[in-house]
Length: 575
Ligand code: GTP
Ligand code: MG
Image 1 (cartoon, rainbow, N blue to C red):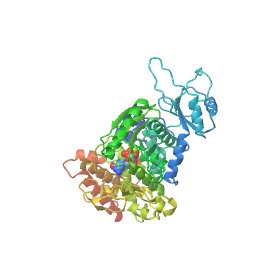
Image 2: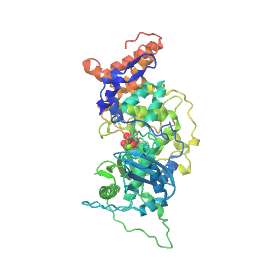
Image 3: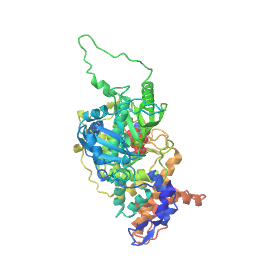
Image 4: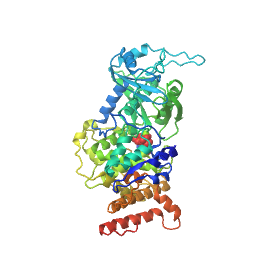
């Protein structure tokens, strides 16, 4: 996978920023896998949807966005289409059921259309003229979903002159394209913005995520009518990268809201229910039946696994039509609130998302994060580290969570399972930061800050925005912002933390070195962010000189010597 992507880099011309020389990016050939791994993708056709690729900084309240998107998804259908199709006739056919607000096509092992009607009734009208297929030797389990299969009674002639259907790309650009874009950028700031623009979720991808949740809700409603399935995590917190998983929350509390709990006179009615010994067992039982339901009746749901003994029980499956890897949980309301908090932080300053995307991408490129659970740092933890770092700037770029709490009003009050999750949700009440530091500086300072952070004694805490003594001995301690006695990075091992520190130091060193090179424009290697996504020098140095000082120590010393030499205005550095 990686080799294919990188092989193409042989002929990639690099427009060097500092020198005007054009040379192939030969160095990339000697770094198998790095960027392709970062993107987790094969070489794919690139291009992003018109409506979603611009650097959008959301300003609407999280709850407003969720409500709007959810309502939109309920009026939307997903249709598997034949490859040869007349778009005009297709839309005319569907318009019989009501006017269409919006539609787009995408490819994922076949051609799919996402069609949003203006009215919910149009969906019912379409369902009423839809039949359950007769499959010959196999038998169909009837299910009236909003996921359809369109067949043509008379297939279109292969040679017929139909304008081809424009598909929206749901995948991130290839590693080659991304490197090309990064190397051609004007500045490191421009590189960070480019990365964000290329990797962020498009409008179409976001619509498809809400639609998938809505389709799963239809299945879960077979057991729990009036339940709600909400997306959370990176699909909605504004830090999602194309191809990220789809975290779903099965919300059963909504059901409660329908009953008015009216006690009339001396009478109070309660439902007869089955009792189980704990909340956790109730969660496991609910997810178990929903998992069965998805497995047996959920159109397009494949590879259903019930992971019920995890700390947070979940049902994992692939939604074939959208291509999303889905994790369905319930009784996980705090995670939804965390998504809202991250969404707020992402919207407060345009530098936040650009920095988080770059750090996440950098971590993936160096295998600091992984899609497999283990002793690695997670994207969630990395995002917390960036937020914390931005709170520590002078003046701060982001406010602390405690400060956001002081700005809250009665409507913002939120207590979940005894935890105070209150913070202001109106952006207008938060003053913009007076800090004007560039992304380039912030990137460099991030690596330096965490390359020298006293992880052995200090904890990271976005609630107070300052280091605190670690309350326990885990190598990395990042306080859970709402369940403050918990550490969200308890799983991280000492060796993984050390790898993070080594790479942070090395990256700071690379960026400082580049600053120095600016005075002598002699090299035309990948620069800035592109250089940081290449394999670690520290790894190869530490292999070659294992018996000497640890690589990270040497890099730290080098970094210090570069810094002191630049302060003394000297060009002689022992790099
Ligand atoms: P991706 O890697 O892009 O999927 O990022 P993500 O933010 O979606 O992370 P993930 O899918 O691992 O988790 C989904 C959400 O669950 C996160 O955004 C958090 O809100 C929450 N979450 C994840 N890990 C933890 C944890 O260790 N503790 C707590 N309290 N919440 C967590
Ligand atoms: Mg996720």
